[in-house]
Length: 112
Length: 113
Image 1 (tube, helix red, strand yellow):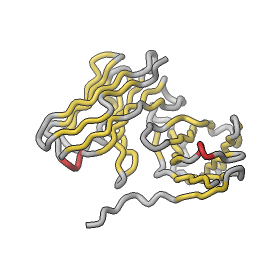
Image 2 (cartoon, rainbow over the protein chains, first blue to last red):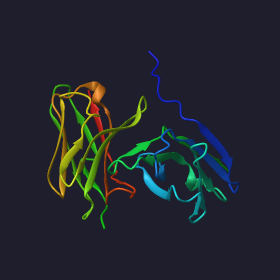
Image 3 (cartoon, each protein chain N blue to C red):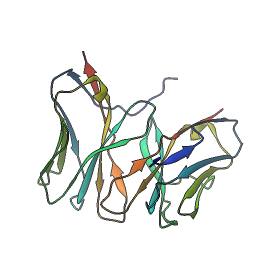
């Protein structure tokens, strides 16, 4: 029979355009958030993090925005490149030990 | 820094056999996590250790799964006996502690036939 897997939301972006990947988190007590990138056949790779006392943090070509009022996190990638094609996960830490809770992920497809 | 080292990278085994997955954490990282990733369920936390002590094993699916961390530089995840539904990619991740991100290994792709 047909296998049924997680339906990952997919964002398709043209090379050179900006990408915005969104994540809703559930725990208002979460105080630390991370974005991970997972390329095919590899483990998730840390991209950028943000703590709850901030609402914006910038890295190289990436920006993370945190809206605690609506429990929303976003990752912006500037000038998206083919190498950015991957699945992106957000993760939250509620402050309980080191345990992170991961979202289901968003697939980013970069078209030429 | 060699990062988190997992072995083997790929494992194919017959149903009923014992499987042992290995992880060497980054030196100085005192938290270690075992995850399983499948198409059906995404990333699932199986168990994690702080300072070599198991803290939360509520994600371990059955008694067939066990994990150990005998010292700060080595951990194993064992499945005995293995079943086809255990087929997945198993990741080990380590962290310096609370409020730090994880560093993931490259994973072990397990296929049970």
